[in-house]
Length: 318
Image (cartoon, rainbow, N blue to C red; front, side, top):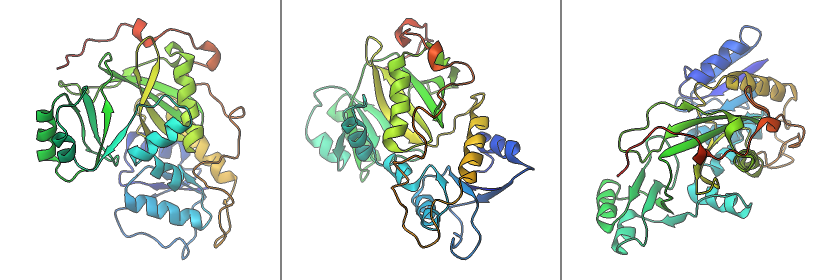
């Protein structure tokens, strides 16, 4: 079987391990979306493509591959939904997910001109990408500072939620859950490494929300950033298509299995045919058919322990 990796970094730890698992029994190819893009109609396609890159060129390539009948994980449509944080919030909240209220702002200058914010804000680039803007602003002066550094950046504003200073990172690969703790992007001392977080220690409401996000957005490989909004209530602040999932035992194996199973199902459409359904929102299997166990915990092993009951490392905050 031929598996294509749509990425500018085939040496990424997750992809490198998946490649080791697949070869030599299968052929793994690398497509750099930043280079010269192939014509899907002029050469044989791979049996399945893994869309790790999320740049506009990568999304355009993925959409073109899908038009010619190649399965892509995640689909171009599903990936695009997670790039625009306004659309992300609208889709998530409309589906009843506990997603942070998100307001679109044309520029930071306009937000700063409105005067002092009623409450501390988290300002993010509207369009998610590497090295984008994520900052806390408690005052108009801080907003003016950000506006000077990011004068033309479309942004979104979310009201800051008091929390432990740690992001709960939940990753899902084909229904299998993995988790870790990492310092917030707002931490002044830097993020540091991701710490272990057994899935079984998370409340069912957290894991349920993470799995539901995949169904809502049509994602097979994704990450959900969750904060404890108080009393163990989950608050989703971001959803990422095909994150790095570093250091999670069993994640590369789950991804390799998903790639092979998807490739075995064959092409979604013949060249020139229209897809029968939006590949970003539909799946051929049902939630009940998809495995939800991880290498360390199954759904039955989850407890009702709230993250607030765990002793987390101290994080200095402004």
